[in-house]
Picture 1 (cartoon, rainbow, N blue to C red):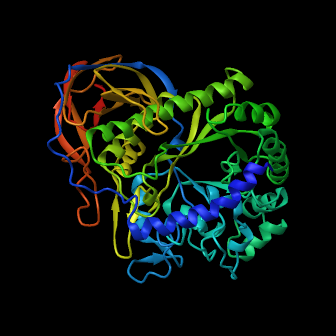
Picture 2: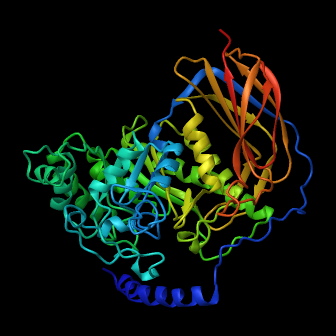
Picture 3: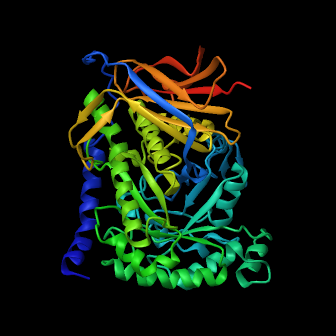
Length: 547
């Protein structure tokens, strides 16, 4: 370990402690809930846009796992959110699962959930979280930031409770991240046996003894989280160090179950040599390469509700795409154009204020950012096979809870539109529209933002076409000509719209439906028709083919 790293590790707890002492009493970096700015200049009217759709040309098949999420022991995501056993004010099942949270996650149709982290996973001992006797532990990853961010955990939510949670949701795939940081390959292999071994194995028998006789058959396992960074327990200063230790974990885990799929810890151009090195050394042991994107990388600031910040956040979707393309190219450079290794974008989201770790505030602009990310994921569906929004409840959240109640952030509704209504095949689509030139902001480079975004999907029978349009202008409606070939629609189409009264509208416990999805009047459609996408909205058009 270099002298610089030792110095950094020495100063880190001191710096964090000082920051925490100042942040709360002095009110620094408060989440900004100012009144939406109604009188901002709207700018010149937009030129009419055009969407051209070739419904006969399929460009990719969507992996359902791109509609995934992520949970860890951070803030009140799990304890006090998903698992709330000491709360007498809400209905619980299995000793702690909140039924209101379960229902809202079911409505979201999440397909895969990653657990137990995240940074938390690289200090987590899975054996503390099974059986009748559980041990309370310090939160090794997050305790420096105080109990609001890094609560202690009593291990009442462990492997079996995680699987009960998924069982209650129905049809959700588990994705488990093993402890690479302070753990060993042997511990990871034993965890695989506990989850997947039959009752004739040592740890499979232990699972049966704990009341779960049938194997869980967990197929997707991550090895390490952001291990390239000095903030992480088990930090590897070189890619070679990580790659060689990764192989030890992979061999031990696959010796228990050869059918499991392994996710290696990758990154983007922030560490330009990392991906190629680990792919060169460990390619045969990797099924997915992960990377994480949080925008705008300015979480020690307060973001005001101006039109400029509206575009600053939406530009993040295009920054994510730039980084995604770089990761794609790094895989192809080592593994070839037809690489079998897929991408797992297993943490993504907007994080523009530190307090969002425990104050679940987002605006409509963040929902439009999320919708734009799904548009990006549809464009890259041939390589992106897993994506996990971070996180599910109370921390940078889709869903916000308190002791009595629950509400949805705008990002929840953007996620819901894509996970509930998109069909499995992406069809060829082109968009012509005006653009906004956005300057650099945080970790987001200068970006040309098309005001209109569009993703079009079709079902297996090729008789249902779903058009999702995103109007990314903060004030102007956008009249659009939509031209469709190789699909003759019935004359009437149903319409849904995600929107709010202003570009900076948000929900809270006292106004849960300021931002919401509404059914709009049906429209007349044909092979060429016009539709006006309202300002700051996501619209869904459901077309059915004539018999």
